[in-house]
Length: 180
Ligand code: RP5
Image (cartoon, rainbow, N blue to C red; front, side):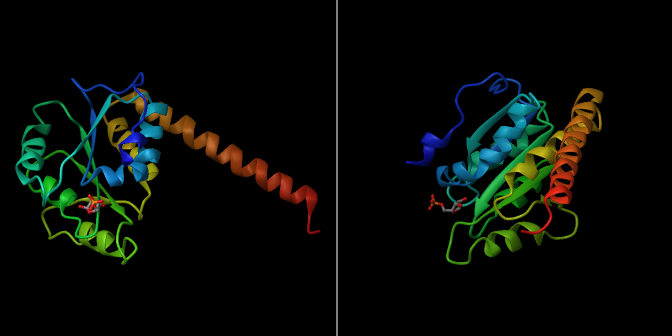
């Protein structure tokens, strides 16, 4: 079973008052979500995760969407593969921003999921990240939280500064060694 990929109980998982809920169509999506969990842990975002499938558990999915705002959830991250209806269906039943993660799960290599998630009808936006790129879903969630919370904004600025320094250090190293 893929459930073993679940992150260990940690300082920032908060099942009672999460700001971000990560949901997925199947436990087989769990491994792809590792990047998102790592980001949420790194930025100490109170988050929870759950399985809700638009096709297999529509009532559960709907309940998550309908209660999200009143539970204080600020961002939903939804991952699904194949005919990936989950992010869009959530978005149709909540005002909370939804970030969709297309999962590479079928013979169509995630393009089916990407198109399913990104091609939402006008009026029902889903913020779609790249195939399997749950890291960016986590980072976008932190940016959304940062819009109304200076702490997350500052942490994001520091993260970006760290990235810049890392790449510049690599570039400096390349400048030193030249071609061999
Ligand atoms: C989707 O179908 C899930 O999100 C998953 O990516 C894919 C396969 O699910 P399983 O058959 O592995 O449960 O609904």
